Length: 258
Image (cartoon, rainbow, N blue to C red; front, top):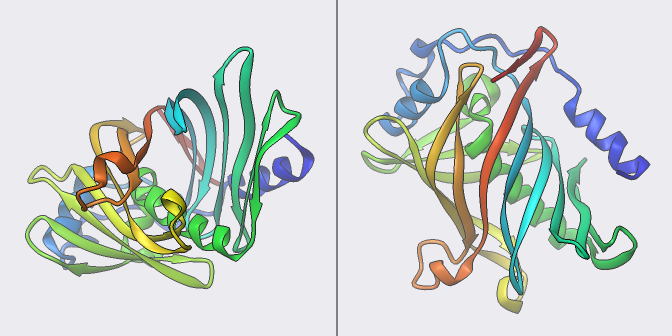
C-alpha cells in the first residue's frame, strides 16, 4: 500500500470513542422495518462503533468476471478504503478505491505497475459518497441508529428509507427488511456513468442471501450489487458478488470481532 493510502487507512481505522451503547428502547419509535432491522442487527449493549475493518472475497465484473480478495476500512460519514487483489497470476490487478474529506479516487494497476484505471474529480467524489452510504447500511449497522445521526422515513411494512450524513451532505438509502429483521435489499440513486451513460443519478442497489454475527453485530455477509436496480436491466447491471470473511468493529474501548 502506498504511503498516502496507508495514511488514509490509519486515519479511518483509528478507534473512535463509542457513541454510547445500543438500547433497543431507543428504536421503538422508528418505522417498523427500521426497528426490526436494528433489533436484529445489534445486540443490546453493543458499543455504537463508527468504523469497521473487513476482509472479503468474491467476483467483480471488469468486462469479464474476475475473482478478488480485498481488505476494507469504512468510517461512517467520513470515508473508506477498498484495497483488492483482482485476478489470478500472471494477470493480477491491485490498487484501491478511496474516499476521504469528500474526495474520491480510484487507482488500479496491473502487476502493481501499469495503470489500468485512474480517476478522480467531482463525478468520482459523488459516486464514492453513494457507495459509502450503501456499504454503511450493509456492513456498519451501528451507524443506522438515531444517536449516530441517521434519520428514518417509513415507506411501507417492509421498506424504510434512511438518510445518512456523508461528509457535509447526506444520502438516502431504502432498505427492504423481512419479518425477522434481516436486511434483504437496499437501493438508492447513486451518481455514476454506468454503461457509458452520461454522469448522473442512476438506480443502484443490491440484495443479500446470508448474514454473519461479529461481536454482537449482524451484517449482510454475502450478496450482489449493481446498477439499474429495480429496473428490467437489474440482472445485467450486477457487477459485484461478495462474501465477508472477517469483520472487526473498533472503538477506543477495544475491538469487537468474531
